Length: 373
Image (tube, rainbow, N blue to C red; front, side, top):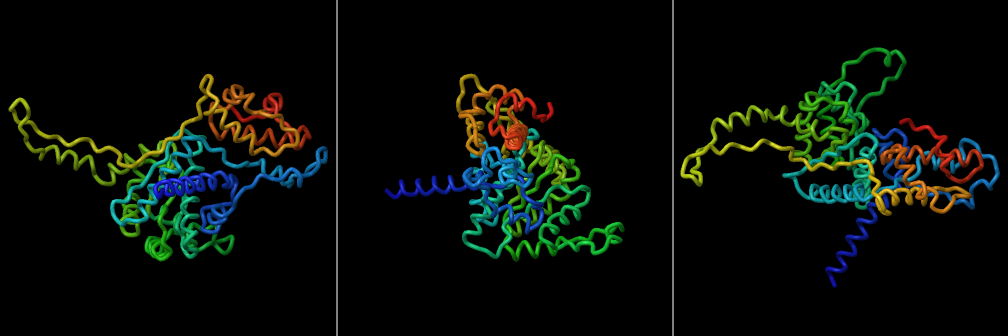
């Protein structure tokens, strides 16, 4: 009986994590500050009630609630997204209860597959779990790779800016004058330690060369070893960028060569002595890979389930039943299974349907929406 109760409690907790991710805002304000990030974490996007909307046939203005809602819609997740979110949840649950042997993570995949949203959903779910118990912490810091990534100081500045430690220019003259970026590593460490930061989200890694990331890895290592902070790296090509940066930062190539020279001799099955050569050092970080959503012949769950999710989120007066699922092949041909393109196509179509009074989504309407490609 106790086992059944625990299983039910775990299932309920996991469902809560997934539901919170689906209700996350897709178009939040600037979130690379504590205030902006906290607003994102605590905002829940709800589908408008059609009974409270402008009556059918009534002209709408640009600030109409339904137009604003359809400008972003809610997340429609899928099996790979849900699995990645729960794996990250378990990793962070393990990391928060230890001070050595912590493990970071990488999110990789082609552009437009939802990597950034997954990164933020992980941080959002983690912070909400912390806030259930504590309201005086900064459990998550979210940064993007700096424009000038060659200097470690610039990476630290991104964290300091999130924490509100960077002095803002007061006058226009100060904005125009180049300033020397100070080293804020000690203030950053102090605040993160005092406010119990446990998770660092690093987005935009596709803009960084491994040589630029290598110097700052040791600073991230310091945060992990001294403060118990987990880092999640995100970006197209992030896996290889982090791996190559780690090899360079830790001089693993030179160390590997030294180990080869000192490799011990061991008797083999043939009775002769052989050198036991060290294996090449692989990336030790778990990697979440997001791909475009495929469309299989006869499959009613993979791609069609995504479309059903969008249909449930739409708020139109005359939406035809299964309007999107009936156009599954057309929508996949238009978007290639990329969630970014699908979201843009459906959101723009829904807004057009509201503005023009059609209140439905048809293939004819979709064909008039330009998303490139």
